Length: 309
Image 1 (spheres, rainbow, N blue to C red):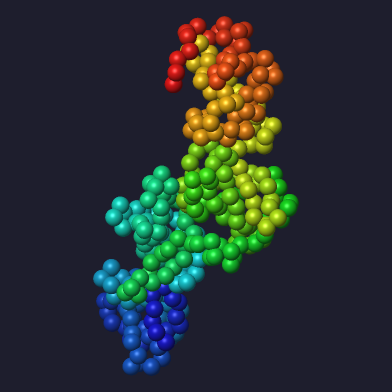
Image 2: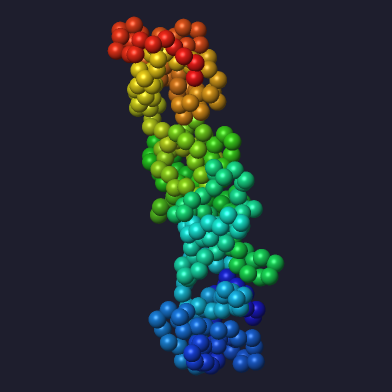
């Protein structure tokens, strides 16, 4: 048996050396042995000749060491680990439940810092070895998820679900949706237009299942249903107009979608639905590429002439 960092091995206690701890290894006393420090015995005190289930890792000096603490992740396995700390030159340190952290190198994440996780976020990673055989994390890939994910049931449609962002793209983010009692989780996607702001990798969100796809994946939204959202969006746009000089803004049905997204955090379709409601209610009017408060609404405004943003 090869003693490898990140694995759990059944080892025999060969001898105790005070004030350090116990040396453990295979049954053959001539086989390689590693130290099980007193502080890593997790409250127990094994005797010489006992067998223990030990997790192996490298200590701060690079020496193979054993602990009886139970890790949250082992070599080759995928799990969700919380971000404990960040080092700008090394990467993210993840909590693995043994009083030490697992490093996720900077190169594992995109260079866009806006997408980077923050302390407390939870990342789905796989434990691997570096060139020296030390524990290291890599960000989970789609094939890792597909091996564990299940097909979302149709009953999820319109339900609120907990999800974790697993990857970020220009037009949206991929997520793993909590499976609860069903299993590990289901794969999902949140388009940019369905989120009020940029989401980051590892962020935990509560989202509504807008669609269950034929392949068992789901499309989610952080926005309310269309009817409820239309009312909320309309109220927000109306409040925005009332704060504008002259009660007017240089945005309309004809404005480009990316401009709408940046300015209001809305998809163009949601923006148009909100404008449609306001026009139907007689609260606004459109003149060319401008949207303005109706005359009776504008009476409470500032009376200033419109100005470009």
